Image (cartoon, rainbow, N blue to C red; front, side, top):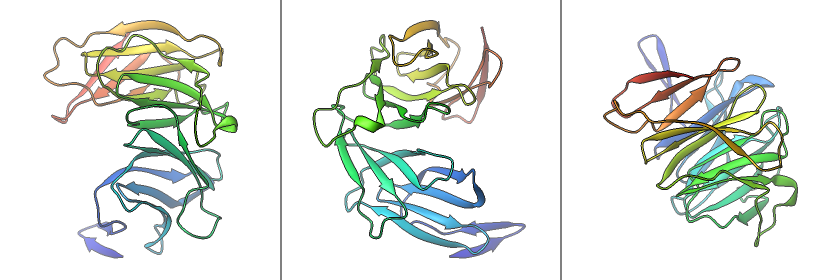
Length: 227
């Protein structure tokens, strides 16, 4: 549904909290959004949101598109698994649910160029997997990002080339890794210790062309770091 709030339009797509959303690159009028129990694709011009995938329990944590057409998506779950979803398939069940060996999966992020690779982060685990070889059980990562001693809030590829990854960890450190030669061993490039922050930057973004990192925390502040 839709209602007006001043100059803004409020789209009511979910009954639970929305945790993740992305516009479709091939159709900017389409917005895919994720709540704890459902993934929906909406036409913002018509305020109509169709359900793509549903889980009875509150299990969904994040998602990302597997291709520009945004027909298929990778969804992370709080129980540690991931699932593949195709919005062209009738029904609300995923195409595949895969156990990747995590205790929980907080974020998933697909490589912007080599779309067969995706990053999963959760607990102290940060690993790269090849979506082409995912199966229900006994999945093996192609690479791992080592060095995290506490809970990892997120891990994201750099947006244009995917040649680096930034992670946010509860040990008060932001880490940047070299992923230019996937799927070989991933080397740590730098570690940033934000000593002056009152809270952990739970979300971070890399500049597309310069070695600049921006982190946001729960107090609403943005912190800019330059190597």
